[in-house]
Image 1 (cartoon, rainbow, N blue to C red):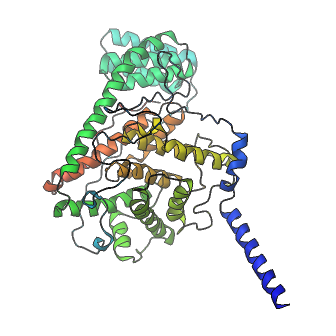
Image 2 (cartoon, helix red, strand yellow):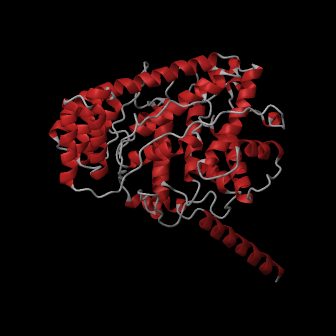
Image 3 (cartoon, one colour):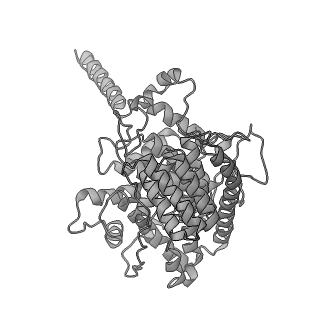
Length: 485
């Protein structure tokens, strides 16, 4: 009877463990079952597909491989190593760590006041249903104003036409020509031509215009990446034992956590965030949820720095663990688990829950692919961020997890964690929406800007009181990188 009782208890315990595991990760364990049903899954956006001379504009992101000076055979994938910072072994010198030691996170009186960055201005999507004839009439009037050198009136008329018909290819194309000719803004003009071709792929004038502007835009993008490379090399050459730099690392650590939770609606100030991290004490007037969001992001950032930055292969379970740390303190029942129902995010409808296990496995395999590893690190980070939020594998915490994975990739190449500031929130979400609509380049440019801004802060560490704070101010976005809608 005793043996029977023990056997029954052991069997019941084993059954309980199996059921628990199936509950926590039900979709991931069905990966191989779904894989048979998805011999070849095609994303809505073909992120790395190249078209030589054929211009395919519908859901084509047109990202080119980063031209490494030492190309490797495709059978032997190797990470981008343009600055000779890391080899594929992922070893790094402790002097290049950009997170402060946990022992250094203590209460201090040297809180740095950093001026708030003005909110980035961008026009909101106008939902007014204007007639096509009215919009085209406004375009014709704008063209007449342009011929009369009345450029301000012409621009207002173009904006009016776009507000009435934001997806009309003729309106987009004419405005793109105006921007290119008058403002010499090739990036903005190229976006207009691209959007016109997304709506009408056979639009002849937009095709001709795009063939002209596309090489110019590619050249501008490459110049920005080379500028980032140069600043990255300068950063690596700095004395990382410099007290000013160590003080800066600590301050930016607080800022990174503050901004990434603030983007999601957390109302804690930078000072509140610093207090929670340094002391672990509660802040009066703030909810437990907001406290736990700060703790969760810090835990996940520490985990990434200690476990994933030097890890050769990132797995689905690593991403689940990051999400578990982010959300486990706030919503422990869903932290580290895929969603099990359909969700809707603004104008984006993510893939079905039944596809998540397959898509996430494909995602981590893509992170190891030759095409991905040959991209510039900033492009790698931006595309990984976008692709993860596009899949939207979790009920909550997708943005925080995506930003952490983005920074994990950058840290693997010796970059500091990049800060996406809460003041840039609207622009950040708008570029993600543009990526959903078919053009990921504005989002990549935005991440490149954030990367360069963060590098500027470190490079001015020795002149801490003035230039360092000025470097935090982002470049003015007067709609140069965004489509006016």
